[in-house]
Image (tube, rainbow, N blue to C red; front, side, top):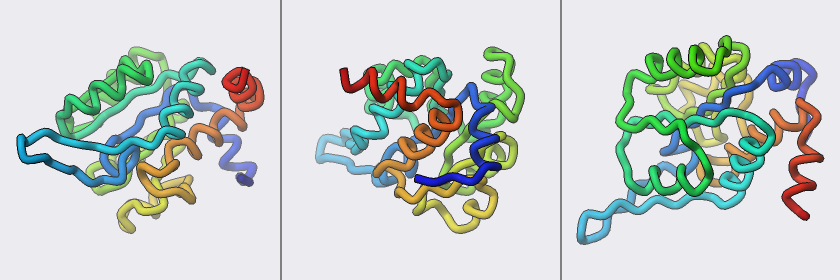
Length: 177
């Protein structure tokens, strides 16, 4: 992947990564079985990227509009402690995370995919969307992934951030060993 100097400069400042779930970490589909259980599909490489980001010292948070035990389980598996579900006004949580981690907007990367994410896409220093994000939000993104939601978009954003910071080779090399 090749990234512009401007995009790399933005990515180098990132200390906090905030992700939406449906349409970003999943393909946006919600499957319900006959018992009413929710089923979601997560991409392993996105998960591995999140683990590498945490290992590299990035703070990672999830802010999502839906409540799901499946998301809670996945976040726990990945080591994400900042999980906010059932949140439609994401800006309040965003503000609390800025304060908690002493970050400014320029230190935040946010990946969302739909209109509900516009507020954070407009604020984050590095705004990102998957390739299949709603067309109306793509124009607000500094980075449009070549990958679709739930199919590597989050991983691609994480690679950008870690490569711009000069720690991708170290973190990815440690993962191999």
